[in-house]
Length: 291
Ligand code: NAP
Image 1 (cartoon, helix red, strand yellow):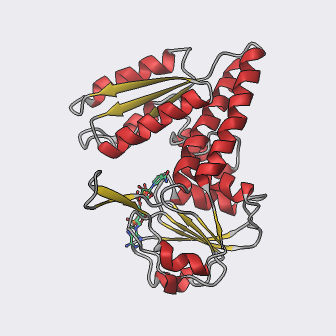
Image 2 (image 1 turned 45 degrees about the vertical axis):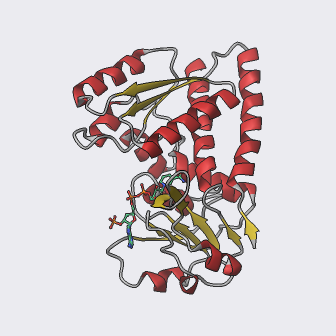
């Protein structure tokens, strides 16, 4: 069994990106600039945004975080997005999700300039992705594709089961893995909360991608020997420690790992790869603007 080390892989990719950024700037390009908007004080969201800010510095990007109070109105948020859309110094813009309940996430996503939408959530970019056109691929699925690629995991003709059909993970993941080329050419099944007998599907799968947000959902009896297991889930489960919680994946790692050929840990698997994708997309946005 091989552990797919997302932390190590993402560190390597960040070093490569840092070199690319310096070469780009040395050739007269503008230093890439990522702007993140954070509305409210959600603990997990603050951690994600802080990590993104730190990663930007590591690869030589400029980064700005716009922190707005939880009671910010949708109108105020949309105005800020428009200002950033118009700001030529900013290449990439992300709005950290989830947003407070009184704000319509889709309206906010639709307001981001598709050319700055480095999260790849705008309908224009989602549409391009589903057509197999060049676009900003949303970060988590892109990170998983990179991880499969770096570990040279065979995907052609493999049966892949994706647990979860969200717009940010399950659906784009299914799209990418079913497209022609590498990593891709999989036969993909998507399972969700209405799927009957999920185990019947997972037991047949060569590759399982778990993105449900249900801690330890995937157990050893649901997995065939030699399967590749990618765990996207991160749930904060209350614990008697300093932080008051532990992070749990969707896979019962201790019991599934001995049966797997490759498996991602939580934390240190998919999470760090997600941030790298965002950086990659921001550099891509900066390059496109120079053209
Ligand atoms: P989401 O929008 O809540 O979607 C969850 C999906 O799982 C839905 O399609 C839901 O089915 C399905 N589901 C939930 N419970 C199920 C059950 N008991 N049986 C079968 N299907 C079930 O979640 P998400 O945004 O995709 O995130 C999923 C997990 O990944 C979360 O833990 C999240 O924190 C994590 N995540 C991690 C990263 C990272 O960088 N590592 C990035 C994004 C998300 P229905 O559609 O039928 O409701």
